[in-house]
Length: 175
Image (cartoon, rainbow, N blue to C red; front, side, top):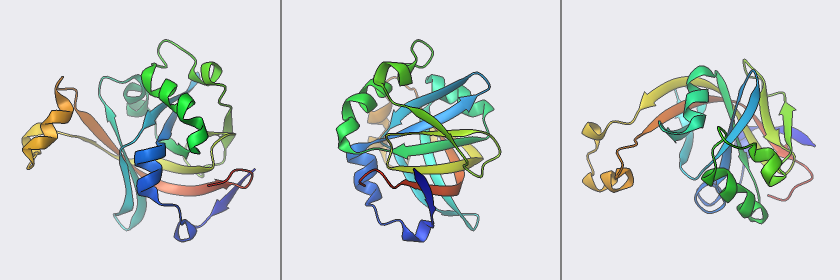
């Protein structure tokens, strides 16, 4: 069961959670729930509101859905789910039903967002977000030239900034 917590009560090491355990970005359309694995992002304050920045390559199916969406969730799992998250990062929702293939169970939650949002029964934490800004990452703005090594195919990311509307913690899962 997920319960709401204040952002100030969140004590998890977000650097470890993102870089080492990864997370799922989930976006819905009228006909589907789609998720993709991410390891890059940031949490902070912008425009006097708590925000979660996610970055998605323009070539990804999730990008197409996010462009039309007004909300997303970022769901965190224990390292026990690394196989499932690896699968979600290597396969496209265009081609497969990732929830079915991985056994992850999507659940609709009240994200206090402008549209339906989902997390997963197996997640320990979910950040619910309303999209506030969409910013293409452009190579002409790189000050550090070594960043370009992440874009050998020139498939640049777009940053989606979401206002965090709710932080939900699964009482049945260890963080």
